[in-house]
Length: 84
Image (cartoon, rainbow, N blue to C red; front, side, top):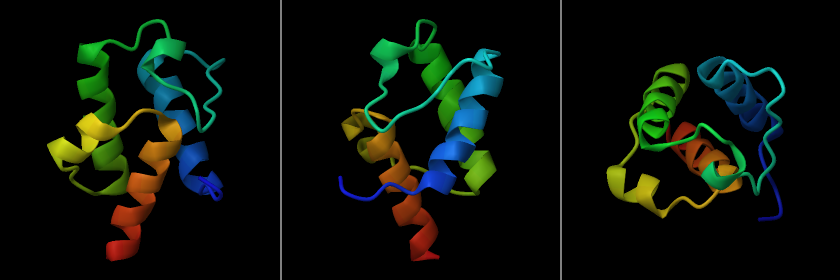
């Protein structure tokens, strides 16, 4: 991925900090669930719901399952936002 939408990345970082109650979280394009200690399946659901509400979009479950890291999440959100 050559280009990452830094505004979306910044907004996601704030969402992650709120959800995990941890102001030390710094998201990078290659950040994944393995990098954040409390990121389990329940937190995944909380994050997705929060992200959908924040960006006013609805993810396709198949697309979500294919995501490997934050960079891919940013690209997906960017795609959704640019479709409208």
